[in-house]
Length: 126
Image 1 (tube, rainbow, N blue to C red):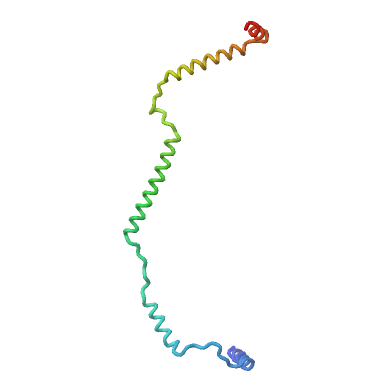
Image 2 (image 1 turned 120 degrees about the horizontal axis):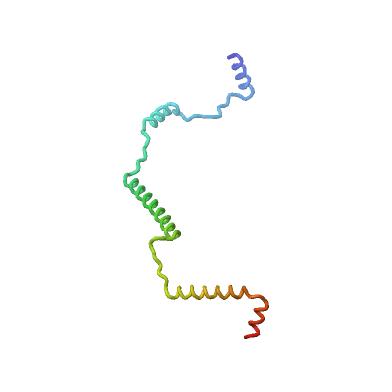
């Protein structure tokens, strides 16, 4: 197997030459190990949230939840009427309008019971 690899490398050298396309700066590999070890040795910086921010965030979330509950409560309170809290006393105007409405209903009922002859007779009498 290594004989084939050597033959392939020989063919490539004859056709393309031994050109070094990539160059490494002098001393790169000698400094590489030190740089990598220096980066590994540095501890990762952890981000800590100050307790004041946590308390403030909790207070803001509690206030927001209370506001939402308050809005829903007020909406339900205005949407559904309270049945037992108010006793409505009828006023004079309301009683009179009921009487007028009952009279009007009676007149309409009487008029509806008339036939054509009764209607003609009432028109002639007027």
